[in-house]
Length: 141
Image (cartoon, rainbow, N blue to C red; front, side):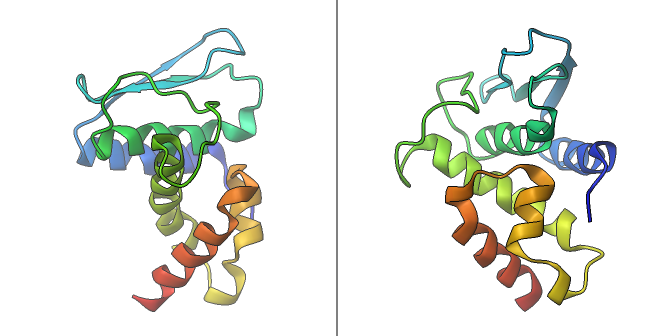
């Protein structure tokens, strides 16, 4: 199942509202990454990002920064992966956790798998184990 961007975006906008996070969608250079600010409880998303399939995961990633109180405003999605203790890795894990309930909500467990999730949201391959674990947790609850 491929999720329309607007349904996933609306789902994440609801999560943002729950956490009192302001979201601004802007037309920026295709290479300008999104950013977030814990101090201002806000996220800025680039509607013109050169890889549109990544926008939903980027949005969840930026929300995760704010939700988890990451200081040092304006973290970028494209920052290099520096290990499981890095703030960027943790924001990616938070993004997976935000998106799993949306992904699984209308799927029977056999159809909710890592490959489909990662393809639907352009999730980096190094998060495969995280995705598998979070999907298992969703159905165990």
